[in-house]
Amino acid sequence: MSVARETIVEVRRSRRRKSTVSAYRDGERTVVAIPARFTRAQEREWVQRMLDRLADSERRRRPSDDELERRAAELSEKYLDGRAHPTSVRWSGNQDRRWGSCTLIDGTIRISTRVRGMPPWVLDYVLLHELAHLLHAGHGPGFWKLLEAYPRTDRARGFLEGVSFARDAGHEDPDHEDPAHEDPDHEGEDSGDDAVPDGRALT
Image (cartoon, rainbow, N blue to C red; front, side, top):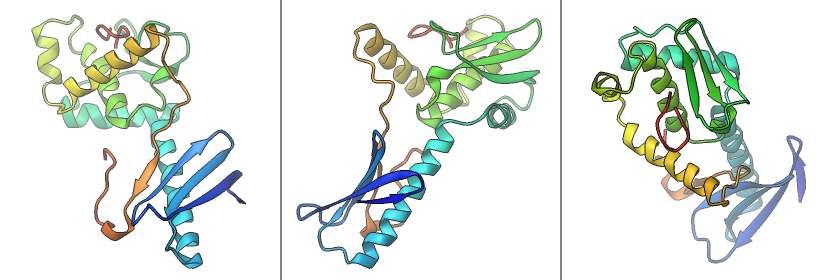
């Protein structure tokens, strides 16, 4: 094992693994699984590539407040014709039963820190949901009409409902991270993809 970028890297070679490379966090370690046939040069190349991929994925899944605000502006422009203008967009750690909230009186949006680490398209949905409330206060037909332009609305709602169900059933794993995965023999392909009361409706 070796140390890289403040994490211990463990390389696992497998004879059953023919072409794919994967990487995931395991506590303080980063495990990179590669085919046994790889040369040392290929190992070094793919370990670094997968470390960079994981770091980029983690950064995108855990944006700062400033990045969150910029993303909200991008989503408003793309899906709401730029009509939603929040005064601020911030993470919030005190929303136990909500994924996000919008305060109409001052135009502020708060997103639960529990959304951090979820797929980017889920975060986008939560942001859009709250942005839409700046234009439509309730959850009537007019509100949902605003969200029709976002192609992953139904999928994101299902994802959030599943997370809520797992938590209520006592099976939530807040530290779970999806692994990075690549096929060196098909480098042109990318498998990555790319409120809100909890489990019910966003507010």
